Length: 363
Ligand code: SF4
Picture 1 (tube, rainbow, N blue to C red):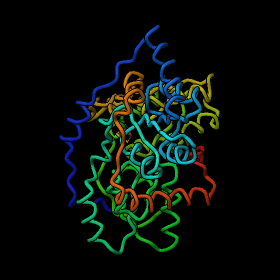
Picture 2 (picture 1 turned 135 degrees about the vertical axis):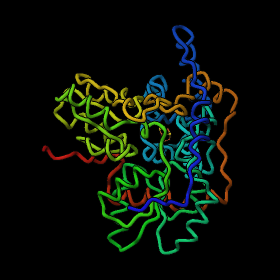
Picture 3 (picture 1 turned 120 degrees about the vertical axis):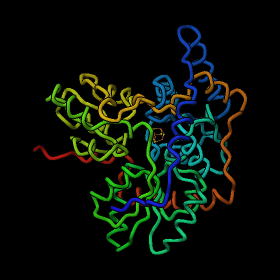
Picture 4 (picture 1 turned 180 degrees about the vertical axis):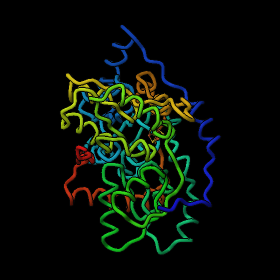
C-alpha cells in the first residue's frame, strides 16, 4: 500500500468548514405536521421525488419512504433517481450526491435542501491537483470514490461506491491494471488489503469515520462481549480489524438481520440507526466510541453536512425552486462515462447495491 506523500490535505480548512456547518433545526408538534403535509403536496404538484441518504434526519427518511421516494446509499440513490419518471429530483444528502443525480439526469431539475452540504472527502480532492497527478501516472487506472466533485469524476476512469468498490478493483486487478485511488485513504487501504491490488492512495479522509478510535472500541467490546461490531470501511484500519462485519451502509443494515447477535456496536454515522431499527426492531444498537487516544469529537458520529438537511429547507426549496444543482454540461458529459461504467458493472454482476457485508469468520 502506497499513500501519496506529495499530496497535502488541508485538514484545518476541512475541520473549520465542518465546524461551521449549520445543522437544521427540526420543527416539532403541529408545525412539523403542517410542514410534512405541505411537502407531500409540493412533491406531487412539482412532479418531484425525494431521495434521502441513510445519514440524514429520521424525519426526512420517513418522508422519502412515505412519498414513494428512496432511502439508501449513494449508489442506489443514483440508480433510483435515474430510473424514476419524476421531472424533479430532490436530494437530501450532500452535494456530490446532488451532482451525481444531475450527471445521470441532465434533462431533469435537481434540487437540494442545502447547497452548503459539503463532504470532507470531496473537499480533500481538488480537481486540478487530481488531474495533474493522473497525468503523471498514465500507467495507472484512476478509480475515484463517489464522494468527489463532478470535475474529479470527469477526470477518472471509474467511479465506485463503498458497496461495489472492492468488486470493481478486483475486476481491474484481474486484468493486470494498477490503480490510482482517490480520495479516501482508509477505504482505499481496506480495498487494497482485500484485493491485493497495486494501489496508490490519495490521503483524504471522512471527518466522521476518521474519529472512531480503536483503543476505546477495544474497551467497549470488553464491556459488551456479546455485541457484534459493524464497521464502515471509511474508518481507520485498526477499527476495521475489530469488525464482525465490514461494508457499505446498505450492507451493514443487511448484516444486522443476518447476524444472530442481539446487540451491535456500530462504527458509522448514527443516522443509519433508523433503518437498522426498522430492519431488526428487537435488536439494540450503540455508537462506536470516539473517545480514546487522540480523540476529538467534531462530528460525534453524525455528519455535520448531512445535518444541514431538514424539513424547513426541504419545503423552502420545493416552494421556490432555489438550491438547484447545476453541473457544467461538458463536465457532466465526461463524468457520466465513469459513473455509467460503475452502474453497468453493478447491473452485470447483479449486486443491486444490496450485496453482502464482509462478515468475519468466527474466531
Ligand atoms: S459522513 Fe463523511 S463521507 Fe459521508 S458525507 Fe459526511 S463527510 Fe462525507
